[in-house]
Image 1 (tube, rainbow, N blue to C red):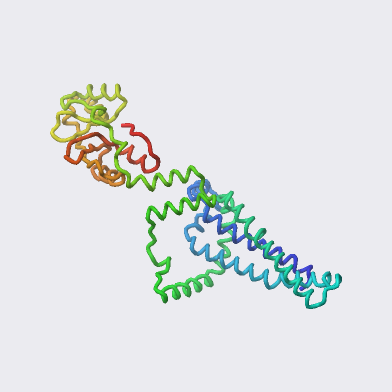
Image 2: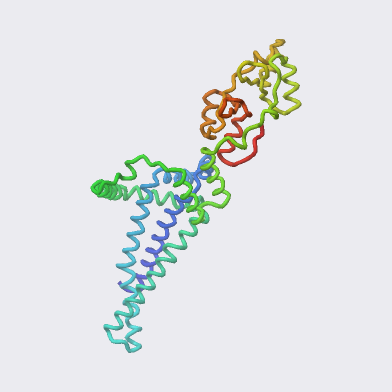
Length: 340
């Protein structure tokens, strides 16, 4: 093959290698909520990218197959073509045939390797990481078309791989339930930040979300002295006035045998029906939570009790303060002071 044909083939192979590299990194780095927003607005490209993310294992296998094919093509076509093109120049400067062929081969190998790394790997990877959603929308449709064509090959390769893994006692990833510990997820988040896949703000939110479920209620408890409450004999108008004055829609009820809470909505309904129902009858039970209850467990307990508030008790069972479901849920994403 002469240089006139080999050069375009080389450029095509480099472009193909770059395509598969960029598609692989784009699907891994793209943020699915942004793609779903574009898909909801009618973007077929975004819908195709989402479909690719749903079968990411197959798409990554397709990318590796494409990269391997292009790399082999560069070795089989480009290196010999460049070597043959350099031989006359080396002979012209006086190198013997054997030495000239060796030097030409080394130069061709170095040039192809350089082009493969820069043009076929690093440049498309950087582009995909900088603009992951846009690159995913551009590349996903043709990339998915390629994987559909080679799906039988990929299925066969996956089957052979799974057999080899089972032969050495390793359960294939696709056949196992994949779980991650908080420590592993934290390592993944930090590695993603190092690679530039997420920014520093995202890393802080992820780290806080991983730490929050195991965190204690300390710092989120409203002390007893600061709890807004009404007496169990308070009228609906008293409840409404207290809520308007304090800006709270849920009020604790004093004097009841068990911890109870009244919502200002119930007071409005009672007043609209001309009923002078006291707060003790409008109130709902409030669950009691041990002080050492983790945030995630506290959220589950309040949801199970269908309550937005909970009393926190010390080791002796004495109430020490109040916790709100809103503060608990917010803590699962960011650490903030209680607002109840």
